[in-house]
Amino acid sequence: MSKIPYKIYLNESEMPTAWYNLRADMKTKPAPLLNPGTLEPMPASDLAPVFCDELIQQELDNDTRFFEIPPEIRDFYKMYRPSPLVRAYCLEEKLGTPAKIYYKFEGNNTSGSHKLNSAIAQAYYAKKQGLKGVTTETGAGQWGTALSMACSYFGLDCKVFMVKVSYEQKPFRREVMRTYGASVTPSPSMETKIGQKILHDHPGTTGSLGCAISEAVEVATSTPGYRYVLGSVLNQVLLHQSVIGLETKAALDKYGIKPDIVIGCAGGGSNLGGLIAPFMGEKLRGEADYRIVAVEPASCPSFTRGKFAYDFCDTGMVCPLAKMYTLGSNFIPAPNHAGGLRYHGMSPVLSQLYHDGYMEAISVKQTDVFAAAEQFARVEGILPAPESAHAIKAAIDEAMKCKETGEEKTIVFGLTGTGYFDMVAYEKFHDGKMDDYIPTDAELEASFATLPKVE
Ligand SMILES: *Cc1c(COP(=O)(O)O)cnc(C)c1O
Image 1 (spheres, protein in one colour):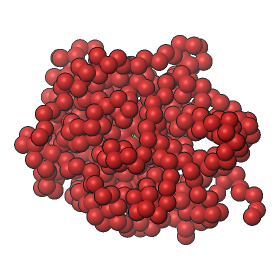
Image 2 (image 1 turned 60 degrees about the vertical axis):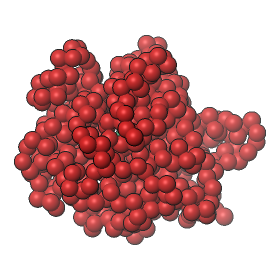
Image 3 (image 1 turned 120 degrees about the vertical axis):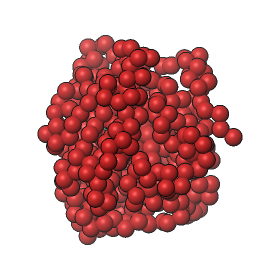
């Protein structure tokens, strides 16, 4: 066979026409969302004030295997997809490993990450429903940027609550969002009842995704013609992100390549859930086996140190409860933790799969992540997002194990985005001012103590 090219691209005609719903193949389905007031499973009618109608159908559907991607969304995808699957020849050579390393690069769009894949879908369904606008939260800023782009494309109003620490550290992200017409408010803010309460209880807080979600939901549910949209964690987001995995699998299949290990970083689980979807599907159906590895920060270790329990998705406890690996909705990662992956919980789909032993999880330290990011940038050229660099770190470690054993494993990882807006964090790393705060057991126990009592 001819040498595998540096980049495997699909033709437009080879792009997926349907999203794959991994839940259809799960023997144990993810647990249902619960109403925060009654603790009963939430029917579509309970969710309707918060989310768009068609997205609720996708959220609750554990059985339909494929959802057609509407042509309007496919047209938008064609502006920046298919994304390349890159063979990391230069990295392999530098490491001197017999492993074959591939990465699926999702950073080739202005939002700089995979988040646009779901943002455009969510904006489409909001527009189709005749809504005026949507509200959301953003942490590092990629989701807010992606949603602003999607909303401007479909002519929707977009109101973003941005975690205060990021709002201050990343003024350029904020301006990108405003360029696309979004309004951006630092969270917690005085604009909402919940924001006022959080500021009263925790003066000087740098905010968290959990706070920002509560504020965005409050505005959506109290403003006619608005709904709330979320960039990760939810089943519907994993569904949209399956486009990553479907393209990856199609590209590998073109050359008859079967990965041994599939690696992704895990914040709320959307890129990982999307990347692994078709591979995990084969695994669940008993057609193939793969090692699937989630990589999370040691400073926010939901899988590796969290509890599998029902918890609130937000600090204000206004959102539905989800059964997931969680650090407790009051958990706020140390402010010296850079970039995203700060969320206290994890996708219920991935949580169930992890609980049932279908995937592994590891945590990595921040300084090791930046060292891997730099190593990668210097040979592969792309300047990775700190989030993505968690996967890079794990992929390099696996490749180095292969160097010891001489195994020619095929490693695929998700390179979810670029890090141009994370230069303050890179600067800290270069100046030796970055540290590795890891929460103590006592801190986690204090947070677990606030988990709601369900069952
Ligand atoms: C948001 C983000 C992540 C983490 O979110 P998931 O939902 O876990 O995928 C990872 N990488 C980048 C570049 C992101 O923007």
